[in-house]
Image (cartoon, rainbow, N blue to C red; front, side, top):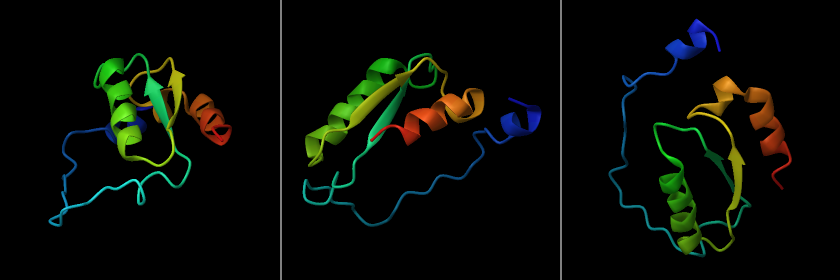
Length: 92
């Protein structure tokens, strides 16, 4: 990871939330295969909440989420991009 990549990660990015209420139903969620990459060394979002995200998605999804654990921090796309790319290309 170099300085220019690190500079892209900041808390100054504006957040936007849609004004419309989003309705999630089994019929509308999960029809495309999906994978969640659990980052086991993430200090921003520890592993237990990440696994809860997967359970929450699966509760409303018509297909199960494939979970893949990587021994990385919060941003594997910066710290281990090759391993992340390989994981995603072989996910399904």
